Length: 573
Ligand SMILES: Cc1cc2nc3c(=O)[nH]c(=O)nc-3n(C[C@H](O)[C@H](O)[C@H](O)COP(=O)(O)OP(=O)(O)OC[C@H]3O[C@@H](n4cnc5c(N)ncnc54)[C@H](O)[C@@H]3O)c2cc1C
Image (cartoon, rainbow, N blue to C red; front, top):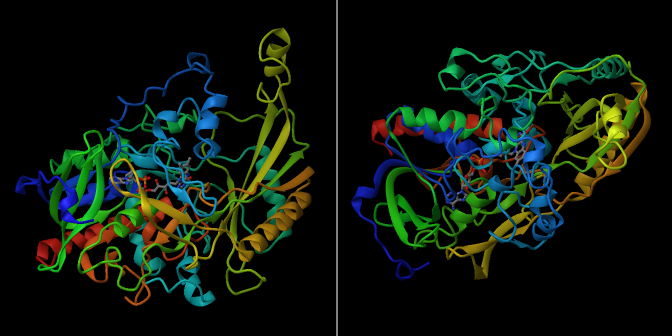
């Protein structure tokens, strides 16, 4: 991009101590920490503003208050073949998802890119499952010879996990497991009677397996630190993706952004599409960002001593690839040619349905926002299988009926009778597997196609490999065996053949590492060759682990921000 393409309206009033690109889970944390550290911080967000409570138009609607009872119409599905595959995309949440036609990208191989462009990003939409990584995850690449060695270990991040857990509010049980370290927990959710029976039978059958209740970012019992944020107890409504009127789950909108705002140091400018980062060849560092107004398309610039890139993994790659200068002709920081490469994701392909002859007089209350889970038990202490790494297992036991699966029209006396009686017990089990980052799984800029804001379209070229197939097959075999041992019936395993991306856990492209020749970022998430730019969203991840990723993004962000504040105050940055 040559300077001539821009209509500059910039002036020096546009100067802050720090700029954060993106206001989702990681950007919200960067904003909070930097503002609390005393830095005047500008958050640039490409989407519209979403103010907690005020901008949740569907949060308290009943099904009959929607035009289509909350369901997608055929037309919506036809117009949105990608995003409509996401389980959370329905009539009650459309307004928080990017529609397919609004923001096109190029799929060199099938990839379902699920996005939320607004203040709060996907923090409004996420499923809120939060587990710490263990030492085995950080040691994985070095031990098993893939990707590159992480420049940090579990002990480096542990205090920062505690920091973010305490503030966000994470419910969980203290299970004392090496494979899934405990955190700063609020009271856990409970397993129901059948889940407990299955747990007992699995644990009695296998020495290497643990079954625990899931850990999630819900306030089961808010503490002072949460009440101060204006948040209250989770009501187990499970309508979270509409925005929670109780602040019962963690989102940027309910938690980090209002806290940053209270410091008086925060400025958020929505509808600001960051086009690229400005690198000053003479100063030898980044000096700001170029922004296009989402509505007027007018270009401007903002300046700061520190820049945090938190646009979510693939958009962070896009911004950096588009940030070309004399010093970095191939994209920001890209001396080694690895920017956009070694993308990874998580393998959700395997699932198993079953039934269980459980107690007919046992019920459960509310819509629990988590599942029963099993930390990875494959290749934990050493390589044992013919595939690398492993997977986590989730399962639930729910009662059929209650109107959910009745045949015929959902109206009339027969329907009312049917919905007043719960049916038998259904079991659902699924996997969340690690994928191995590969150079061939990459993203790059289109040479000839641009979006409405003049930014080249992102091309995504990401696929499964043989390791992923073997891992999925192993889960299906082990899962069926575990459910058999637990006494389940009608066990039916399947492969959903999901495209990569639908896991919504994509990472990589700007990985951390020790060596500037083989990685982009150092142990503090700074570019090796431009330390005043930090990347702390999923793009920084060297490998994926089996855990849900966002808690780790939060902890990495808070850690990096603390380092940035220190260096800023010392005058190093
Ligand atoms: C349905 C669903 C379920 C999920 N479940 C879980 C779960 O249970 N556990 C878990 O850990 N994770 C889960 N995730 C994933 C989780 O939402 C993401 O990992 C997390 O939001 C990533 O945080 P982020 O800050 O990187 O990106 P986001 O939260 O997506 O925020 C990025 C922000 O950057 C903005 N942006 C992008 N480009 C630009 C630009 N050029 N200029 C300015 N702003 C820009 C976007 O508009 C967005 O607001 C789920 C996601 C979805 C959608």
